Amino acid sequence: MITYRIATIPGDGIGKEVVPAGQQVLEALAKASKSFAFEFENFDWGGDYYRKHGVMMPADGLDAIRGKDAILFGSAGDPDIPDHITLWGLRLKICQGFDQYANVRPTRILPGIDAPLKRCKPEDLNWVIVRENSEGEYSGVGGRVHQGHPIEAATDVSILTRAGVERIMRFAFRLAQSRPRKLLTVITKSNAQRHAMVMWDEIAVEISKEFPDVKWDKELVDASTARMINRPATLDTIVATNLHADILSDLAAALAGSLGIAPTGNIDPERRFPSMFEPIHGSAFDIMGKGLANPVGTFWSVVMLLEHLGEFDAATRVMQAVEAVTADTSLHTRDLGGTATTAQVTAAVCALLEKSAVPAANAA
Ligand code: ATP
Image 1 (cartoon, helix red, strand yellow):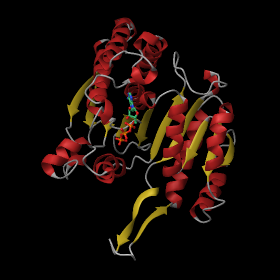
Image 2 (cartoon, protein in one colour):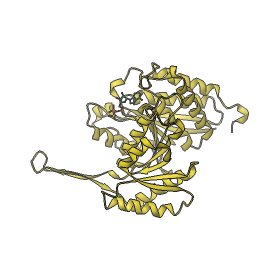
Image 3 (cartoon, protein in one colour):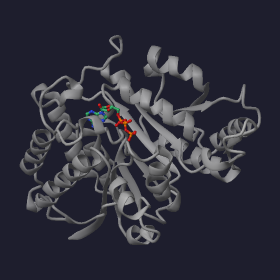
Image 4 (cartoon, helix red, strand yellow):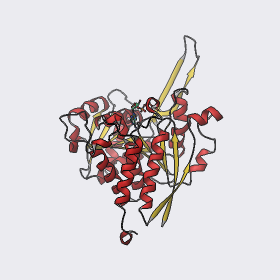
């Protein structure tokens, strides 16, 4: 029996509702398993922690979670604290501290979901967006001088390094190669950004030679938004810089029906550090504490967490339970046009998992 050590960081807003729901799903899974268990440790970092201590997480916080097998994260964001403090003080501190350079965002239209693209069949939209997660537009390089004066100036410098681009390209080509269509689209903006994005394009060509069986093409980021809407079936795996993928993946989540469904993994492919899994939505203070939060994005993140741990059968069981629940419109939360609560959706997924328990004889 293997015990996985999981750090839970609910953070702010509805993160405090969906992360416990995700933990419940993992607990239901473990109850039904003879081969693995989970040991959870919860960390109360985020906006409330900031109000008490002046920081979003303690200075030695990374050391407290360094030894974990994975992190389940909720969201960071608080109406009373500037966004750049909540983001840089917690989520990015973990992503950068643990060099989780590949941000992976699968998008599909799950059964029962009424997605906005009426001409798109559910099977036409099956994408994974790979977002460069360690540099580019969010490298944090820049500065601000002469504040408040007419000559005030500020910069955010986008940095791309050869090492950073090579590793994300290699990750994306490898991921594309592992998917049935072996198809990769490299998003660029090298027509307007004539230094770093040109290097990005050149490195894509170089790395593509290591993956002769992967078909790939290049698309300008602006054109790719139209392609996602007009020709979704021409896309499969997509790789883009930090900012470009940030925007495209919100569009992808909306096209799949709701922000509340979409998951993401912040991955250290070399496994030097724990990887972190989270729903892509934010803290959604408008619906906080009302039981309205859709926990499906967190459950799908749990699926990614299980895949990362190598527990593929368990991951498939959770995904099947989630799909059975989304197929039942009486279990839709308000964002999907239903009336179900976070607790009802969670209980339904847990009940299915307990029913689908692996018989002892099959357990490893
Ligand atoms: P942040 O500033 O932390 O990014 P936000 O409230 O600005 O948070 P999101 O939380 O990403 O932005 O989402 C915008 C809106 O989408 C929310 O106000 C909420 O109404 C809705 N929403 C987001 N996630 C969910 C969810 N899991 N379930 C239901 N509705 C959601």
